Length: 411
Ligand code: PMT
Image (cartoon, rainbow, N blue to C red):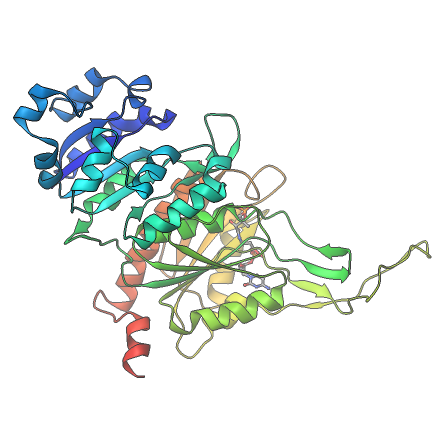
């Protein structure tokens, strides 16, 4: 596979040499095209050494153009990948401008275009960038990431470039102009974030879930080519590219939305921290502090995961177990009691699990388990999704029909 790797000017450009090595491990020939601002972050010398080809950066370089013109380069590419893709380069591609070699190749090439955005999280969630992302996706551009986590600017959020091995794996699976990930053609429904159970018009019961783990799982499934629907409690996270989010507040609403969404889903992953109990009565007005003590009667919320796993035609069902002690023992109990296909056991506490950017987990299934040591939630999610895909095909068979297709065939 011939890859034109465009590098634009963001701090994540320092990962470009590693990305080139990963792409070459997949057998790709890599021709690097840098923008002038990328040269501020990574040297031509390093990139030439790892790619084994002279670096292209100038549209007006007569010698380079004589050897292979920009039009020939655009035709040579089986894939044009831009990593990192800055907000500026995304905007230029949307507008159809071609002021430099990289954007000229984007205009002149018929090869699939893949972008791995990287920028400050506020820049990523800016309506201008989000509208550019939507336009690019509509035009069939594949957008990988960005990941969620700590950023070079010292802030945290969605905007990190995906790790080079994840980008290389996704690009390597490009075939016939389409992204063919392990979950291509599969619908994956994911619950994420907390729920809020109202007490009165101004108060509610909730928990410390930020939604980071669930959204990272959603992004990893989208990178693997799945159609992804997230049923999300209230969180403050930008929607990953290629993911549909349905926002809910309460466990009851999450239950209802999930049951509707899983009707044609192949895989269900319950990463949300759903309330187990809610107030039996919701006061119509703000409760006054008239008494020294008060108590709130709580009633059970529906168990969404157990309900989905017990459906007559259930999707491949993966639960999470958030435990403070005996983590794998309790998780295996939940796996068996709720008759799940898999469960992801993670320790939670004041300093781990909830809200942090990192996590560790042990994934359990009927006759096996795999431990993943502490890493970023983005990387952990990628590993979990790969394992879920393997187990899904091992259990259901590699030729199992996507349920979306089965349902539409019977219409
Ligand atoms: O969101 P973050 O800040 O990134 O934190 C991530 C996380 C710690 C929330 C996540 O990794 C996690 O562990 N999610 C599951 C939290 C949880 O509610 O665990 P549990 O052991 O109480 O529940 C077991 C399973 O049943 C979970 O899959 C849960 O989604 C599901 N459940 C629970 C109650 C309920 N009423 N309905 C459910 O579906």
